[in-house]
Amino acid sequence: MAGNSQRRGAMRKTGSKKGPVVGSGGQRRQGLEGRGPTPKASERTGHPAARPSVARGAATGRGTGRGTGRTGSKGTGRSTRRSDGGPEWVAGRNPVVEALRAGVPAKALYVASRIESDDRVKEALKAASDRRLALLEVSKIDLDRITGGAVHQGLALQVPAYEYAHPDDLVEAAEKAHQTLLLVALDGVTDPRNLGAVVRSVAAFGGHGVIVPERRAAGMTAAAWKVSAGAAARIPVARVTNLTRALEALKAAGCVVVGLDAGGELDLPMLEAATDPVVLVVGSEGKGLSRLVRQTCDVVVSIPMAGEMESLNAGVAAGVALYEVARRRAAR
Image (cartoon, rainbow, N blue to C red; front, side, top):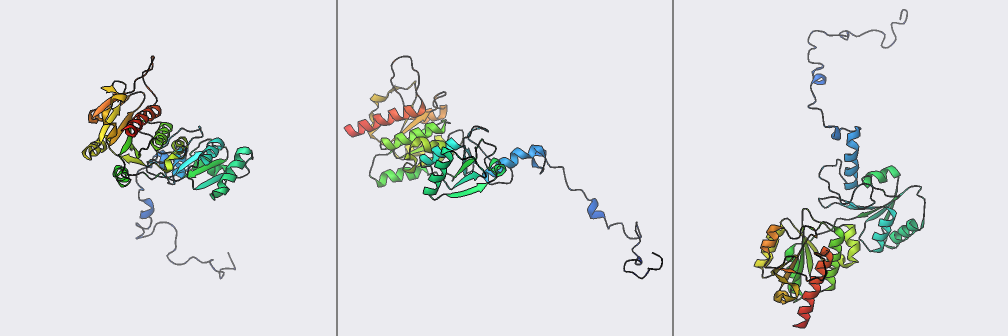
């Protein structure tokens, strides 16, 4: 400005001329370099396709939804669980209250801010207080995120990951107690309620544990805990990568592997090996025992039934077989 050329910044310094000058070719090279391929839509923050992944990741403690597994579906109010041993979330007022009543181990109770209180909310808060669980008040948006979009009704219970045992631990426990080993292995049983029922029957008839495969099988979720009626706190559950190999190892250790199947070689009451160390193998109600597992069994027995019934629920079948083994052992 004329007459004010002495003010600071009024005069352009030498060499500060805008535009390209000699030797300026590399000044903006870094800004022009490529940043690699465009990320997938599910990996781009703010993109609509990324929202489900972020929700799943938040529910499992991760930043993305990769590598997560769930039991139960969105909107059912059931639990969600990580496949790699992370925490489980029980969402919904009734499921949370039932889990607290059943004594399911929990770490914290999450409550939505400004929740409309009713009898279930009051009972959940009292039970959590009595058990000295952490009570955390969060926004509804945060609760939607950590539960993976489940219908939580303002309540969510964080359950720690179940600590699975090793089959050798079950064998050693029976040896230390100077008892004849009795185990149940589940082949393809995907309903956690059946797993909980089996754990309860094992506890009732003097068994020493349950073995489940790692894939395509139910795990010890909150639903299994509830059905076990507290037996899960006493009966260990072992998880194996390959059920067939685990059964072969138990056979090498002196166990008799007995499969339960409608087309068995003999009826269950005729099983003479019941007084020996036994591993009862129960298949799914629909498919029964898989081919390799059936071939691994020393003997396959069936439960005699009247009428036109062809099969029993896996939990019921295991309970009947366990009772028969316990009866024979008590009578010897």
